[in-house]
Structures are given as structure tokens and as C-alpha cells.
Image (cartoon, rainbow, N blue to C red; front, top):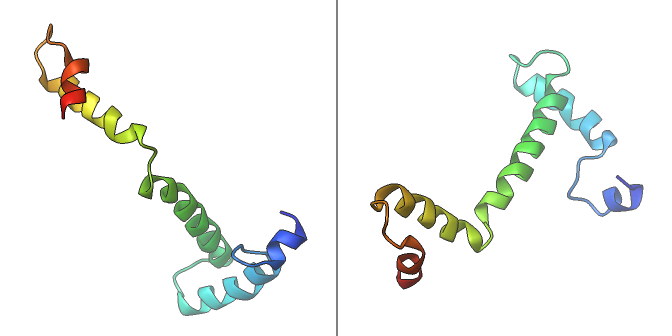
Length: 86
């Protein structure tokens, strides 16, 4: 990550990680040594991974509807036309 981008904030820099990780390890004594940095890194990755799910593309509801109706509509019915009506 460019230093310019890190300076704008909103991202963990090595310096902020080095300051925050020991504080987490002190506050959470069950974390092993080095666990504070891992916890911060994994938490950031988890949030970054879940964020797209909170605002899915418009195709996702259509795909889910097709999946559900495809599993419940008897074979031979025209599911494509029915999904447009709903």
C-alpha cells in the first residue's frame, strides 16, 4: 500500500498495527504473543470479505429466486417466464 494512501487513514499501517496489537494482547490475555496483530489482520479481512455481501449486485436476488423456484417448480414448467412475473 502506498504511504500516501495509508496517510489518509482508514487502513492499518505497520506503525498503527505495532501500537495497537500489544494493547489488544494486554486487554485480551488469552491471545498468544503476536495474536493481537493476527486478530486485527483477520478482523479487517473478515470485514472486507463481508462488506460486498451487505450490498449485493442486482443479479443476486434474481439468481436466488431462480435457484429456489428451480428447486420447487416441477420439471417441464417454464420457470424463466414465471420469474419475470414476480
